[in-house]
Length: 149
Image 1 (cartoon, rainbow, N blue to C red):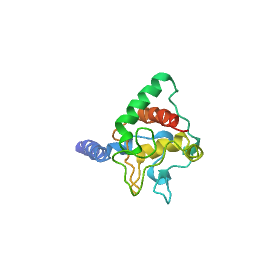
Image 2: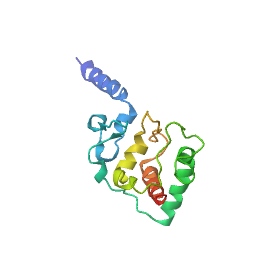
Image 3: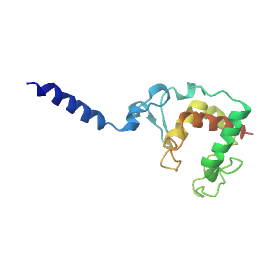
Image 4: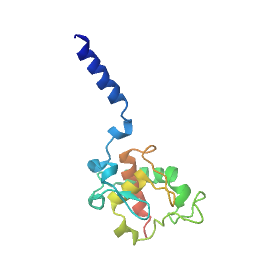
């Protein structure tokens, strides 16, 4: 009878270890896969993302950091000026032109965050949740917005 509480504790500990670490990491607004909407264009964007505000305050330092992050993570596909002409860009499905001011209405900060964070399969846009922190994604968003004409 004394072993029952210990056995129950072991079962709970094993069950907790079986939960993937990424399931414990919340993205802004704690949006899980069930709350994300799959759009026909392949983006997984949760409801309310368009209303989400960038928590990183823009400054010269943040823009410089965002530029460095863009060069390291985005430029190879989106190109140096953001027009989608990077050396790794798929010629059949060019990356979005980040200089297009019309994209601003369709891609407010929160939507941009989720697109960068989660990516999509077709046309390919890698997910950066394994490569960048939340703060880094918000920082690169500030820089990407400076590319708009």
